[in-house]
Every structure is written in structure tokens, then in C-alpha cells.
Length: 206
Image (spheres, rainbow, N blue to C red):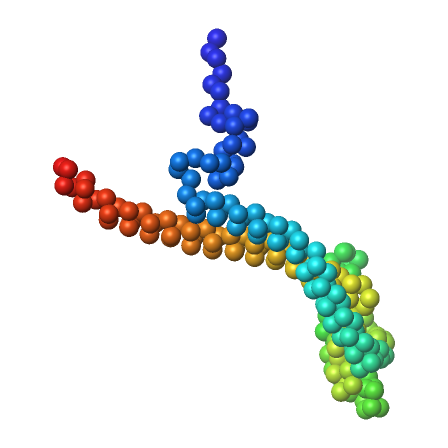
């Protein structure tokens, strides 16, 4: 019966392989140790910076969205509007798609200044002319979206905080990659200088 071939790197040797930059050996360069310390420093920096950065960004975003919501509540009005013609019928009445579908229809409404206006807004299918729908209009009498709700304010702030929390480790990885490339270039430059010093001896001995 054939014997199983042992793995090239047994599990007990993995820590030694992964931590080779920390162990003294003739082949370790100063740049290898510097790269290890940079990795540790950036990891600890990202670990400690992520919570405060996420909180600061989330808090700033929450205050921004709250201010936006207050401004919208003060400048947007929920106004009744009358359909001037029938809305198109959906090809599949009663289906889930029909319940989600909206069609543009011309409506007439009175703006906050008391002027009668007409504009297009999206309504449910098969709504007959003369029916009343409620729309949001701004101070200039233009149809707009509803004001931000409390849930939208909260979700927007959470989304910004999550993005900030993800950006910190990404920046850490980018910083480590940049430092590693610089160290590699330094190593290559040292190798070139060393080879330029030693190469004449090799060619002379041959």
C-alpha cells in the first residue's frame, strides 16, 4: 500500500514560515524587518482608527441628512392633484408587476402660492381622470420627491459609517503595498550596486 506523501510545509512549521522576517538568520535584510514592522504598525493603526473614523463620519452624515430633512420639510408640501386624463392600463392587471408599475399622467394642482398649475406625475395604472392623488411640491410649485424620512436619515448615516469603516483598512493595505514597492526598489538598487562591485572580480577570475 502506497504511503501518503507528507505536505511540503507541515502545520507545525507554518508559524516559522509566516514569521521568518522576525527570526534572526543570515539571509534576512534590514528591509525585511522594516517591512514586517510596517505591516504591524499599519494593522494596529487601522484597527484603532476604524471605530472613531466610522463614528465621526456617521455622525457628520447624520447631522447633514437631518439638516437636509428639516429643510425639505420646511419647503415641500403635500398637495392634492386631479388627473386630467386616464392612466394607461397595465397588460397584466392584478399582478405584482402591475402593483409596482407607475405611469406618467398630467395633473392639475394648486401650488403653495395659490397658483393653479399642471404637470406630470407618476400614478398607478388604470386610474381614471378626475381622481385625486397627493403629490409633493416645492415652494416654486414644482413636483418633487417626499422629504427624507427618519429611516432614510438613519440608513444614510449608517451607510456612510460602513463605507468609512471599509475605507480605513483599504487605505492601510494601499499604504503597505506602497511601502513594500519602495523597499523592493531599494533592494534592487542595493543588488545592482553590489553586483557592480563584485562583477569585475568574477570576470577577472574567469
